[in-house]
Image (cartoon, rainbow, N blue to C red; front, top):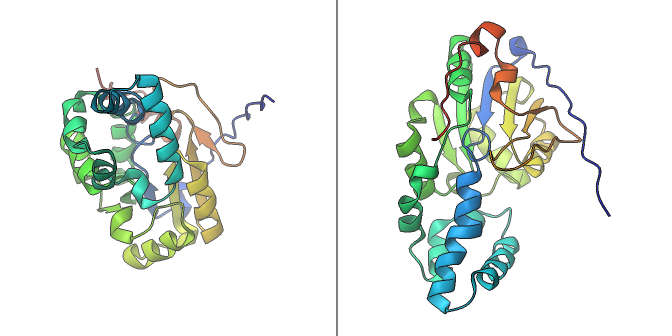
Length: 240
């Protein structure tokens, strides 16, 4: 049965009612093509060589193993998967770090947030070793008041208790906080927690079709949140 695509719910962000902005990393600020390629193609290729099996079989096995720990800390833990698969995944990521790229209009959006004096936090499920590779490649770190990995919190963002712990760590006001993420489950959990402003990124990967949320306002690019004069000055910050 084919599920009909959702129509776009356009965002209307009341900036005067927002003090704090929580931003996801992979798929939101960074092009998720890197992660999709790494886990679905690059790792299976090396796994197939290690076990002398076809790449398609390796991919099938690995996708099943990934799925079993989805929405947990293990899902994005490079140390866990290096042990599980018998490969140095951090080294493999470094070999293709040229594929790491920032989405268009991200830098302009971060600049705008600072101009209007919003607190900026990067909140990611990414493992600290992956985060280090990506921050080194993109130089996004200085834009943020603080960067929080899920492993620091002790839970993945999909877990309800994650948001209670994050609130204790950062001291934000639920009613005056905006969360931008490309994972609906994360947004649903944050909504149940009581975050007032939620936004879905409908184009997490430059190589995949746009997919709007049926529940949350969606954007394809951060340009949609910028004043016209700011958006008009955009320069390409995407990967070559």
